[in-house]
Image (cartoon, rainbow over all chains, first blue to last red; front, side, top):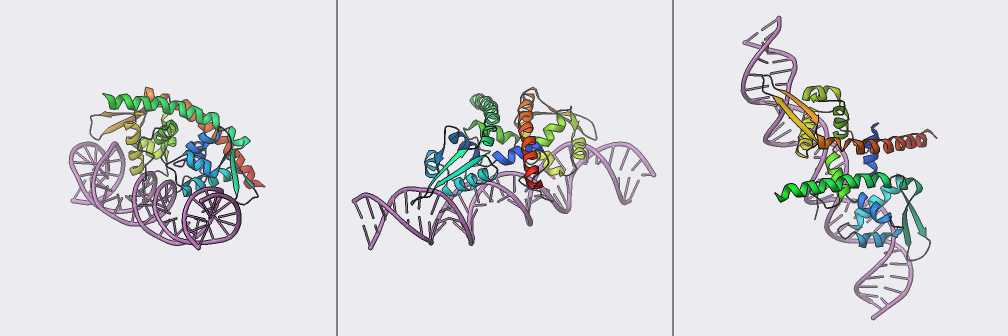
Length: 114
Length: 114
DNA sequence: AGCTGTACTGACAAAGTTGTCAGCACTGAC
DNA sequence: GTCAGTGCTGACAACTTTGTCAGTACAGCT
């Protein structure tokens, strides 16, 4: 029976990964850790991402309570995304992941170098 | 251009996730953190996993330097997998991920309860 | 002789994720 | 009037990951 990882497995590691897993979620959180941004700002700051995927990931992160969506009721619409209080508890974890990833990348590099 | 996350992105977060990402990798590492195990032992200790996926994940982890494969040259073959010295640097990171995941799961539960 | 167990591979299907493309409804600039 | 920009959706194609099934080669048990 193929059980999606997204479907609430009782494993806490999977639970965390299901929140940050997604091709661009790490990058999005990274950008937003410097302060709130508009949808189109985010889009421009991550050149390779498509609008479709940006919005899908943003919606996931809002649903998971990591981000907050604030919309000014104007025309044209003006939407800001920011990291929620809960989302900030995730940031130090990401930093640790990042640290490990950096040393891992260095290792891979030195392997390719030889 | 669809760029696989597995294909060395320069983002350290992605680099780390590409190592531990996989439906069962967290669970496998969890089991092995108690000591080396044989392929079939692992298989029995994770009832839902298929042999195919176990072996594919094990091979990934060996390739990434996280696990060590030791084979006794006997018939029938006897293969032990254990966490490498490098792999052990990953374990504390997994523990932090696990801690966050646990509180996240509790939060999800209390949401469903109401 | 037939069955089980070991560790693993290959071919392929199903499911999941990501990307592409078109479109909405409105506004302001040219 | 046409174009660009805003934030977003739906349909669908392409790609990736996971699962299913069969098969390998040897050995021990009955």
